[in-house]
Structure formats: C-alpha cells, structure tokens
Image 1 (cartoon, rainbow, N blue to C red):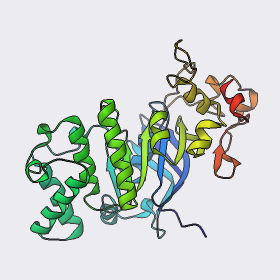
Image 2: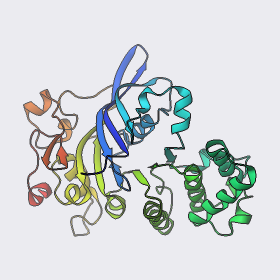
Image 3: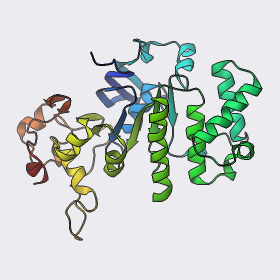
Image 4: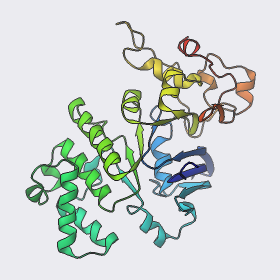
Length: 332
C-alpha cells in the first residue's frame, strides 16, 4: 500500500471580488504531494502559481481575494480551509513553511537574523531562550551560513542576496515543517548562487524528509530539482505528472510550447521560440479551454468546452481536447 500524501489539494478555487464584479482566477486546482517529494509548479508570469500556493495557507495578498471552494488536506485529514484563525496560526510555520522570492521584504529589518529564528522556535516549540538560541545556530549551520555564532547577530541588510535567501530558508525551517513552499527563491540570484540554493533544498529534503512545492518559470530548474510537475495556465492546471514524462512526452500544447521556448531546445543559434499571444487577464478569461486563443490545434470544441484534467497514462494527466501523443508530435 502506498503512503498517504502529506498534502492533498482538491478543487481549490480563488476569486477576485471588487468593483461590483467577481472573477475566478484560480479554478479547481487539484494535486497531491508525497512525503519527501518535490513538486514543481511552472508557467508564465500571471499563470496563478504563487496565488495557488498562498491560498494553500490562506495568505492571500489582498482582502479582495477569497477562496471560493475546495479543500487542502494535510496528513491526518486536517483541512486547512476549515481551520479557525487560531488553529491556522499553528499550521503556518509548524506544518507548512514558506520562502519567498524577495527575502528582504519578508525578513524584519530591525531584528537580527538569529533573534527572528529563535523567537519563532520559542513560539512554536515552547522552549527557553537558551535552547531556542542553540537550535537557531544549528539551523544556520544546516543552511550553510558560515560562522553562525557571529552572523546570528547581523541584520538583513548586512547579508548578501544569497545569504538572505539562506536566512529566509532558515526562518522557514525554524519550526521543523513537514512541507516547504518555495516561491521562485532563486530568480534574483546569479547562476552560481542559484545552484547552491538548489543543492541546499535537495540536501534538506534528503536529511529531513521534507516535502517541497517549488514555484518557478524555469523548466531547467524543474528538471534539475523536481520529482513531479504541475503546468499552470490562466489559473488552471493543464498538465500534471512525473517530471520525465511531462518534459520528454508533453501531452498539452502549452507544455510543449514552454519546452520549445527554452534556450537551446532547437539545437541551433537561431531566434528563441515564443508562444504567440498573451495570457488572459483575470477579468478576460476566454470560454472553453483558456489556452485556445493561442493554440494552433484549437477548434470549435476547444472554444466551447473546458477540457477536464484526465489521465493520459497512470499518474500523467492533461486537460486538452486534442492532446499530443508522441515526443515527435509534441515538437512539431
């Protein structure tokens, strides 16, 4: 019998409600996350990746945004969407941690790095100052911050970009969560530091059994880091499955387009491939398949009916009326 997932997301939906109108921006998103598994959520800017993950912990960035449906179940069956505010504070950090793309905006500039981590440990684990400080120093060592005894007394502005991101990871790990959400944590870093952060996440997964949701627009990072991939477009998952299957045998035309856009995909030095058109805005979602205005394979059925997310093979699902069938066809 396979182990139950540490996270199960079922038909999660989020709406924007303002100016007398309501627009669904995250539409019936479903996926699971296994213990020690890394799931990559990939798509263009505005596809709903970050919004989906913020909705998982009910940390939406505006009062005009509201979860309108779905369940987010943790191991043991606890539904995050049904928790009281008090119980929710126990889940955030303690069971689900989150690291952000810009750590400078999420670390307290007037509190030392060490104190931020130690205070979080004291709050969630109910330990004394001395023990919390010792645990904090151990976490700083785990995330590769040199000379933690000294750096613990530094402030955010005294850290480089890579060290800030390590500090952000340390803050997220302070409460020993089961799940870590990483929202494009390497985007603003140079390639050398980016590689270091990716290796650190893999190391933490192996040492702690941590389950990770990694949000990115970079399929190269997905291939290097992740076990499974969820491809999002305009607030919906259009393809979902094991990394090798999705990247080498895409079934959705949007996935194939993203792969073709990666530098070096065509094997020559010509112009980089692009997907024609632009993603729709929140208040301008097309009928039927949301990708059909940009899809060369679209027909009347695509414009009229939203395709369900269905399995093409066991574990590999796509939402397409005319799915791609072979690797060669996907590249055409």
